[in-house]
Image (tube, rainbow, N blue to C red):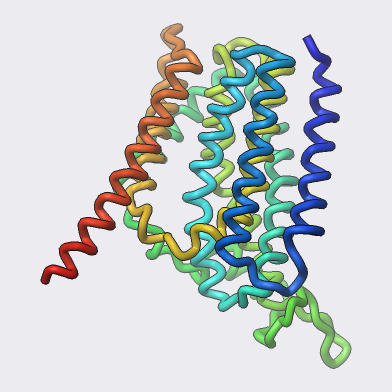
Length: 323
């Protein structure tokens, strides 16, 4: 069995090299990212994630690798829902395409830092108070039902968010064209541009989403609520989260023109959250659902939601053309 320190080193090295490639070779400052480039970058991150899955399968075992790919798929699907909110934030602040890439990058890197802290805190709490998993289960059950019947994200208004309102009171903000800048100096004073506000809101939004995603992934990879986390479980939780978040930037540019085509993905994610919530709660009765069954249910729910969304979009277009 390969040492986990070696695996963490390889994982960290892959992430650093990939970021250098993504930023240095695939992206340039103040340039718009085309659909073609976004597709290439998305394929790049997905390939890396799948390669790490293969590495875990060969160097660890099939169970660890399956836990990783299940957690990654769950995080990736939640990230898509996250991106729809990102699109609304960028639209609200009227961010130019040439500035969007860098703002997304900084926001996502901040999100990774907060994710690491939240995961560490979550693991510590669950290890000390394993009953907290049942609270998380009830929370996911509530969130899933609420998400299923909730209206689409168009109702979300960044101006009404607490982080936006508090930031306008605490910081000097300017509506001057940022031109790629996050801070500008005028009349001897420092002002934060709208790009700084965008970065802050991206990080804050991801923190809110992490409240759902981290308990979900923890439930998927952990064998039982009253058993301490194994080193492999912790590795899977961190790696699946980080790989999913790193792919957000390219996925944003790929999906920003296709928001309306995935109208029922939200319901698919909601069903998965309800399933995970139930899975966490029934462990109280010593009923454990295997990671393989969880993987199948997640794939079926998400694929069905995507296919039905595409079907409805096509049907609605045909109906509108015929009338």
